[in-house]
Length: 194
Image (tube, rainbow, N blue to C red; front, side, top):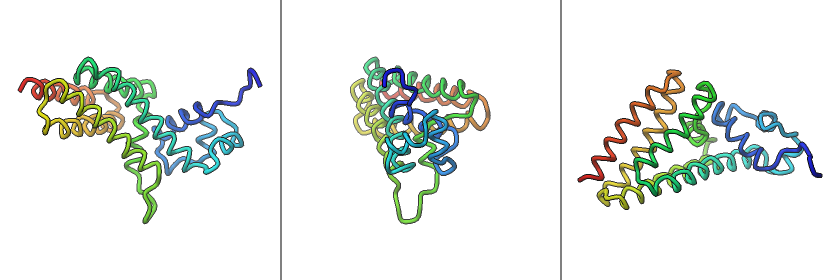
């Protein structure tokens, strides 16, 4: 129906990613995810018949893909440009949420999974991190970084930024992200000039 107020599937996924970035996955119910996305619980189950598990997995994939899209676009100008865009994205999310939101991929990654099971959302988080690292590795190599050093530097970039997001939220200050940004830029410059 035209003009219907029922939110789209994509809006529910985006809302779930935002809620997970604030509260984590284990502390969030499907009812709360639906409410945060301003979606009726019935339409949430219609779109996600497997419930919270499916919605959480798609939310993590959504966040991972959004960051990868940004990196692909910005890394053409070089690894430092990609890093700056990556940092600007998270700075915006942390500041606009008054330090309440961070990275949903990280949020899912640090929670204890059920015994004897790797939840699909955790597998999606691992894929997102690997995708970001691969994009950074390729850009570093294309811009002159040592072939063997590039993957480690890419992992350091992702891990440092993700850790700095958590530190910034805890300290309610962007100083950790600023400090990490400065150090990573210096490392990238060093890697590209050798």
